[in-house]
Length: 407
Image (cartoon, rainbow, N blue to C red; front, top):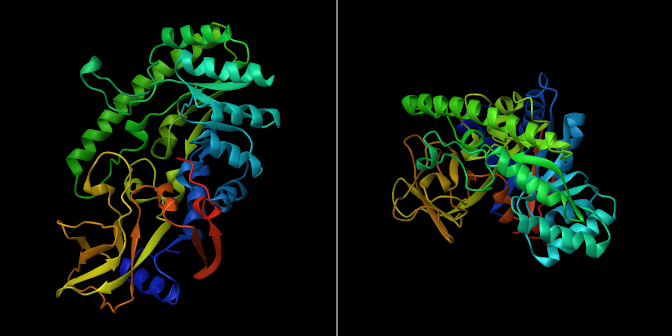
């Protein structure tokens, strides 16, 4: 369990992994389990269930642990590809929504195959082309494939001039959703049974960053306005869909950073959590929710190129998204380490400047980092060490360790 003193934690974990091959990745199960309990607790008042975003974990043992430790509050998986959904189904998971559309024939065949096995799986759609592909595969296979209609939940305070959020579905208003649903109802082999909408401008934007008081206050105001607008719009869309005859069983919304806010929307039946369990660098500073950093990786110090500097072997595990320094791995233990601007985190080496008072480094000592995002860490490692009660208790495979890279 992390003590809150990064220097003390560094010395403890340095001794704990002594003799292990570096680089390595590890998860502190005390922090991971605390995050599971915290996420479950966010829905005590709402009564909503929580769908687990497997993209943010990418390790079967830890996905199972969320359901085992979290109990009945956790229900269903939000997968990121059809292949991953089929993989999870083969390992005993059910109630799967694949969160990103695809039209590849192989994916359509997999959707049909998983459905024939009696697994509940649906694929996100936002166009007639998506629905037609599913319908054709369903007819060809003699099954009805399920679709999840995605609605754009971004914030446009002044029309099209400003778009705050992600660019996903083109469906934004009730009439657009109803029109597509009606056209889909005329297709044999597919059925729309769910709706989802991801408010990224609320769920993934830090608004309690130390030293950014004015920016934090502005972001909170924008989030409040955005939440009010999208709640009203989402309610209207769901009402219109049901009034037009659509049998919608699931309305999914939100993400780790908006677990409480999204749950206040009466039209939502469930919320999604993923990054909350690892609490990576970009999910550390929210006003509304608080998670404990749980996933880390270690690089070995291999050089001391100048006084006050060390160089680690490897480390160029840069997160996806827009280009920015915040997408570099976050050096967290010991505290105060800084990148060299001309190099940053490199494929083969990562030089770091040492702060005053840093513990002395020997060649071979580790430096501990957090990935900026959550599950992307597991694309770099075959295994995760699991630490609990101050001991290494297990070594489990990531998707990569099982031989899979789904996207």
